[in-house]
Image (cartoon, rainbow, N blue to C red; front, side, top):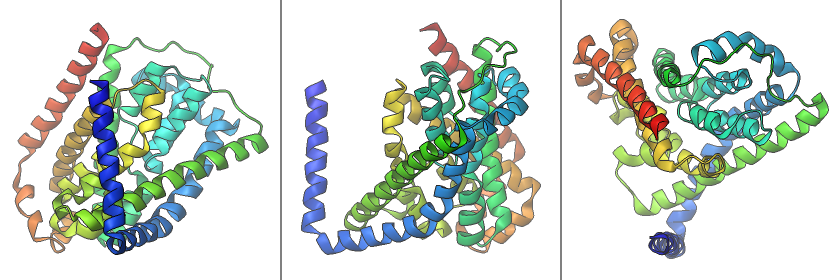
Length: 340
């Protein structure tokens, strides 16, 4: 089985190499487009935030945040208080901030493997800057739509964290948090970690953009492959709840960027993929509810896409049923995993 898997991987990589060589002009054009996205969106939007988030998490400044968040982190999510800063910054900072901060906590032995897995099941989010500013204001030209998308994806992640906590013992009151570094040392470590993460993201975007220019997969699949360019180039064909689904799923390009972290903490990709689907379904259901509560945003967005009208006819009952079903699935999956 292992040999067959290795052969398939080698065949896929050789095929990709041959495509890049045989269709060099198209590959260069796609790579140039990916580089523009990385240069204009990813690097200026994510790098400064990642440096600050890492700095707070690694320095003594983060102790105040983890203590403030301790009642929620320990009592509601039943997670160590050291995970508090990683959760808040991961959900608001954008991919892959949550995973990078989780990796940092794991590397410093501030959390164990099981806790790191729990965090990666929900702490992968587009963040405020990307979803509200880039997607909402710049791409959709509708800040209200961006707010709805951000609220949908963020609250659904918190629901997963809450319901999955039922299968874990309540964390006792403790002042044990993560190990803090002196500010200068934390700044150096944070800068190096953030730069490495952003470079990995940019490289993946460039590679997927180059291959996408050659393969020309359907527009509907584009955000599944690479979320940034997929939404930027094809947003008009997707209803708002579908955009929420896509943003929560995050795209295979993001998944590939996190492979090393997933492997390091001992998490299977199937486990990670399954929770991406659950998060995506919950986000779509919540987005449907929010567009009913705030029809103005949906109406403005519908002017950009002719395909947005039908999904908004879905009623509250169906959306609530989808949310309830996802919650039951979360409890069932965690329950079966704990019995194993």
